[in-house]
Image 1 (spheres, rainbow, N blue to C red):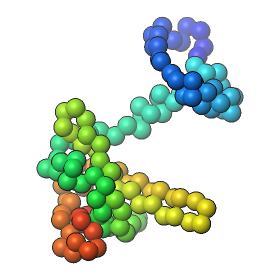
Image 2 (image 1 turned 90 degrees about the vertical axis):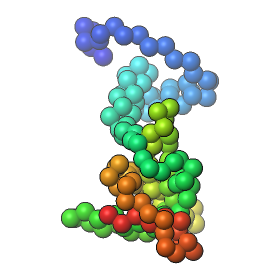
Image 3 (image 1 turned 30 degrees about the vertical axis):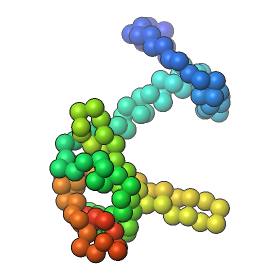
Image 4 (image 1 turned 60 degrees about the vertical axis):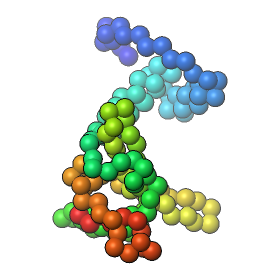
Length: 138
């Protein structure tokens, strides 16, 4: 960061040797100093964070359960069967994703669909439990 641009906020981290080694390698590959890389990584993470929200569902109701879904927008429609991945914060709010994994002979592809509060409110128990535990059509 250019001199005079910083607000002189110093943040200390405790890192294991393994984590520090990974950060050093990532900074080197990206041709950045370690502080530059860490600032950029923190900023990227902060911008990517999605909000938690109150839900009628509990984490245990949905987490790692199968869901048949159809997500529709004017320009596309995505459908399939995936699995809910749910995070819960200390305010009992949730962040819900649908994760679809596809395995190839030597690779794994994972698609993750982040649900809004409005989408989460549309989750229903699936009428055919042999297909999936839940259903979401939006």
